[in-house]
Amino acid sequence: MSQKEVQNMQMIQELEIEMMADMYNRLTAACHKKCIPPVYGDPEIAKGEAVCIDRCVAKFLDIHERIGKKLGQLSMQDEALLKK
Image 1 (cartoon, helix red, strand yellow):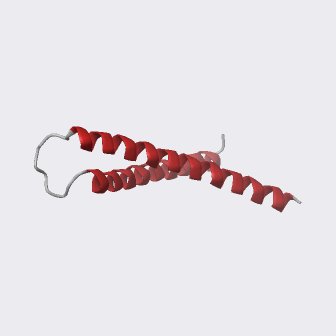
Image 2: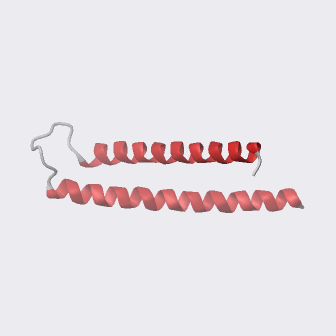
Image 3: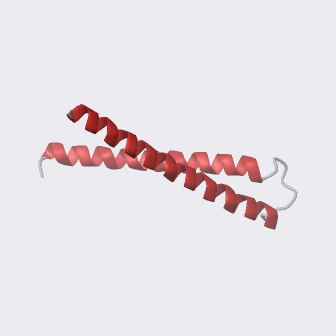
């Protein structure tokens, strides 16, 4: 493997880590805002809060996966059009 290929792989890996960290940060902020009241009345997470967080995370990840698949399809369509 050439030095340029190694550098490209490292750059791709770094971008992937940044994207995952960004997704995690957005998920955390969105679900915290939606499910946890701004004033904490109890130091522990209540059952209703935990259920809300579970659902929020599941929906967020489902939408993230759907968007990723759709973007992949659009990218393949673009590549097919460019090849014609």
